[in-house]
Image (cartoon, rainbow, N blue to C red; front, side, top):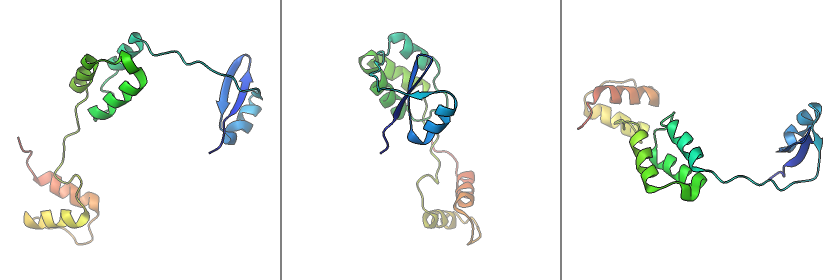
Length: 136
C-alpha cells in the first residue's frame, strides 16, 4: 500500500496519494513534513445534522446504524438507532432476489411463464418480479 505524501499550500495541509502528487505540485502544493492532525470528536449537533439528511439514498438500516455508531461513538444512542430505523426503510424484497439464472428459469417454468432460453438474467428477473404479487 502506498504511503500518502504530506503537502502544504498557504498554511493548508493535506496528505495525497502518490499518483496525485504531480497534479497537486502543479497547483502549487509543496511536499512538507508529516503533521499530526487532530480530528475533532463528532458532536451531538453533527449527529443531528446527519440524521436530518436521512434517508438520503440509503435503504439498509443496519448499514446506517453501524456506520453512525462507528463514526459518532458514544454520541449515538439507542434512541438514535430507533430513529434511523424509522427513517431508513429496507428496499422491498423482490421474488428474484438472490436467485441464480437456473433458479429463475425454474421459477418461471413452474409459473408457466415462457421465456427465451438465451434471456439475460435481468430479463428473467423482470419477468418473475412482474408476475408475482407481493405477499402480506
